[in-house]
Length: 298
Length: 271
Image (cartoon, rainbow over all chains, first blue to last red):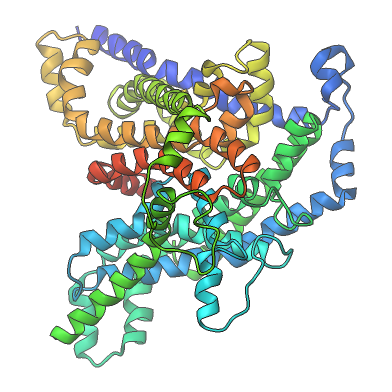
């Protein structure tokens, strides 16, 4: 009886997990692995028409990419997004979470939902809204700046302002997600601990450094890992707001991959870009984990 | 004390106002007459609020069709994702089968791989299957939701084994146990997962942009992006388009936010 039940249970387990596993294998893992293989071929529009035109070219795609200034531009832009954007998109939500977590705050749920709302909006729709907000002549942002005597900035039309402009939008859009995660972490910090430190005469900064931060360190690590990965994956923002311009100043790696693959149909070269993107994310993740381990956050 | 409460609350209100302002402005400008928003200083409220932009969107731009497309794709994505991931999540939590833990560790490791890495080969794979430029192709990534499996598995771990054993002793088959006992317990997490998939597939842009070539198949974000490239100057019209695109998900989130936030937090714990 029990042995039969065991077999029955295992059979049911495979039956229930099987379809999802097959889908993951077929539509996620296999394509991801195939990306590496594809990157060693010259798959292009001719191979798309007739697979007989396909040849293995070794590392040629990678060689060409390294010689392509636009690839380096995309790489630099994505790194800039990561380096400038991550602290901004991690720290502001942390402060917001502390504010919302304050025991002096009234109507907490209202503020929480208002701050979170942009995260669930449609990226393309709010990109359109922000393109208008950042309009040089009629945008609300430049109007507010004009009130404090700052000359209009050509946010999306100048190669120096376009990246910060998109970052401003990304910050607004993803703010709420990080804030909610921090808020949950802050609520696990025992208030007695903070209270005790306060009675002992510890100031606000000391308490933040010695009580709050150590308690939320793992969350801080998690949020920054997720943020770095997200910053490497910006696509719709430049697609809608700047189309990669001006002068390639907002071409991200993913945008470059899209154009390489689906505009010029250089699928071999596009796959090489995809694989390099994966390596970048993996490298930064490992570095962050290493730093965290040394710092004792894990 | 009261002063402190007032200051903190005022500060939070200010930050919340700045965050919500773009959304309110989008709504306000969408009711303005054509050209009204192209002025300095930018008008905050419409002089004569009207629905002309929305009328134009539905009559001349056929946005009704894109709205219907988006509804269809998101509803199907949600349904399929639930059918695929809920039983799998339960199986990984509660059913003992050979290789289960090894496979699960593999799935955890696979989370590091962003979906975009395989987009080009997936496109070729679907082309070979004849699914490019069809909703079947657009729906495929939603079948492979590792996150959903995690979410359901985590919830299932809290179901006591004794309960399932008792049902087995009473002679219930494994399928019956899933349907009669497990699914009712899982209903909160099913709502959460459904909400997640619906919102994500509604907001998804890159994959539908790649896989859907015919304009009549476009989902709202793809249609809006195409429209915004042609009508850069028509701010009022574009704001109305943004409202049509984003209002359904915003309302859905606001009415079911408890379920959404629960899933968000459960999802972050796994890392």
